[in-house]
Each structure stands twice: as C-alpha cells, then as structure tokens.
Image (tube, rainbow, N blue to C red; front, side, top):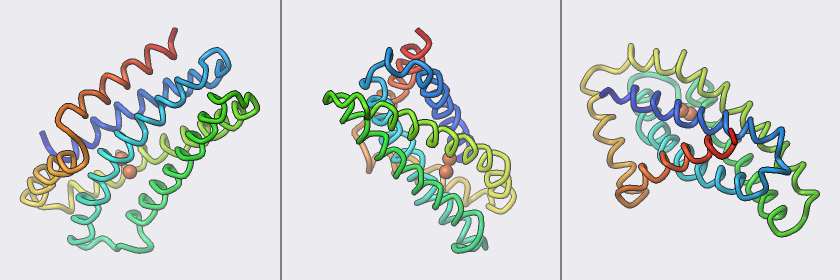
Length: 181
Ligand SMILES: [Fe+2]
Ligand SMILES: [Fe+2]
C-alpha cells in the first residue's frame, strides 16, 4: 500500500463518523451526550492524532522539502484547518460534558459545534483528496513515498499502544450503527 492510499483510507473512516455525527444532529436529544463524547474520543484519537500527525509531521514536511512553500500555500491552509478542527472538537467536547452534567442548554452548543466541524472537515478532505494528494504523488519521488510509509508506522507507534488503531476502527463502526438506529 502507498502512503497516500493510507491517508485516503483514513479519510473514508473519518467521513463515516462525520456521516454518523450528521445523522445524530437531527435527533440529538434522543441520542444523548454519550454519543457526542464518544465521537470526540474518535476525532481526537484517530482523526487528530493518527491521521493529522501523519500529514503534519510526515507528508507536509516532505512536500516542503520537495519545494512546496511552508507559508502562504496549500500546506499552510491545511494546517490552519487542522487547528480550526481542534478548536471545534474542544468546544464540542466541553459542551457535551456540560450537557452530560445536567446542563440541557448545552445541547444546542453541541449541535452548532458539530455542524461546523462536519462542514469544515468534509471540505478539508475533498481538498486533500482531489488537490493536495495529487500534487504529492507528482511531486514526491518514489523513495520519498516509501520513506513516508515507514514514518507513518512510527507516528502511530509513538502515539499509542499496539491495537489502538483497531480500537478506533471498531469505535467508528459502533458510532455509525448507533446513529442509524
Ligand atoms: Fe488534513
Ligand atoms: Fe487528511
């Protein structure tokens, strides 16, 4: 498997959870805060750590080493969107915790932050899949792509215990199932 294909595969898993989150928004009261807390667990651990760290610490650095600008170009836009995503995930998490603690007014905040997060991440993924990754495949020589693949494994090993990836894949499936019920 090629490095870019791993990132694309992770996008499909993340999109599955965004769809689940989207489905849950129309029935947030019935879903309850736990679903939203678990969604932020997934977004922090899988989307932000496993996936965004592969992009930020490996792919983007290779793109910069092969001539893409660090500032003022597509890489800077992607980094800024990752940061916006982190802020929205934190806001969503904080509102879901207050809701779980009995503050029912926090539910509207959960829904607002979740909607903004869904919109942000969906368009972010489209841009990466259709623009940035195509540029990467043309710009990066085969040895850089092989290097990326090896570094991707190290990113996950540094971040989490063995089996954590499988745990998040199972959580994604569970969230999709819960929201479709
Ligand atoms: Fe990204
Ligand atoms: Fe991505």
